[in-house]
Image (cartoon, rainbow, N blue to C red; front, side, top):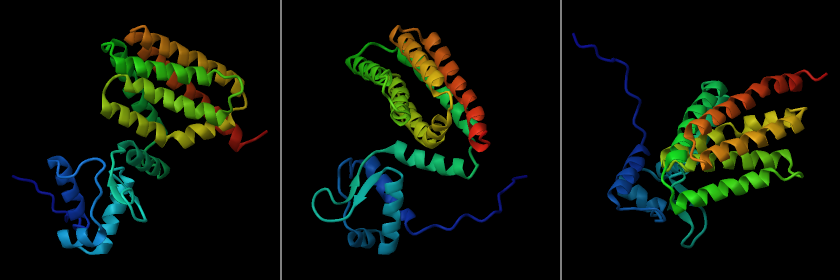
Length: 252
């Protein structure tokens, strides 16, 4: 006996045709990064949809990081094809976290899985000029995080960039994009936690030591050690947050 799903399909939205054709044109090479899409009127006439539907489709593609839309005239105005996948993913993850559909614990667990894999891959990947440049950028971020006059907000920004830079060493653009998205999704959560730490000097000292240990393991091509240190670093930091949040909610 064949079991079929009798639930009705969601209605097809008029702007779906625009999205599908943009995807097809990107696949075929008919449009490419940096190209400017035709104006609203031309797109509406081409795909047989209203200009309102075109505008809606453009807004969605903009939010997804597929294009950048701006008003005015000139070569940089209108809808320009770009590729910023982490921007759209970060926004979606943040919204679903805010609705409690996705938990911080699950985001952290996913981050551990991705970062530990990336650390092992980075440590054992061939030495290339690109890898050396990425290591130098990560090292520069470490030096910046070691500055004694650093405020919490700046440290947080540098910290997020350091983790994404390390992940990029694995040479997997999907992993790098996902890491950037996860970092963006929990940026507000982490920032709030850092702001609420009463013993920030202790936390800061530990984070700096952990970052250097992770970097040294990757640079030393010890993937297993790098993965272990990353796992300990991430789980340790998030273990500090509940107490700080409790103090913020119940001061004194």
